[in-house]
Length: 114
Image 1 (spheres, helix red, strand yellow):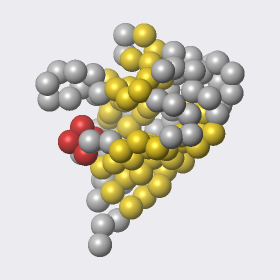
Image 2 (cartoon, rainbow, N blue to C red):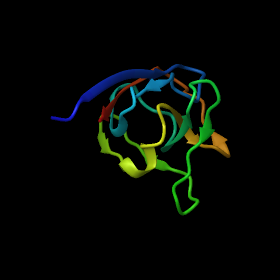
Image 3 (cartoon, helix red, strand yellow):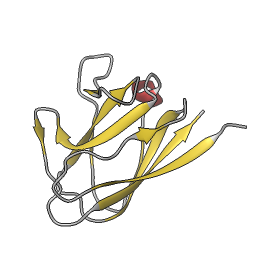
């Protein structure tokens, strides 16, 4: 049986990035926005191998990994884009133009499997 972990995190008012999602050597496979209105129309992701230095995630074709978002929706994520990273952050907007969370904190749950 596969191990499934649900990680709860937020993007605070005035910030563009979430806290660190520690996947415990699993792979990020799902995301649910559970409360708040996200300020951006899309999110992107940052990955890290050490939990300190984070870099924008790009897929194997060289495109930034992004996702259009609407509040109170759940999304399936491609394991291929996240399997190499133990630490992930979510950013509102894209790397070239991050968006600050404007009106209220956004909460979400990330699902990690191994």
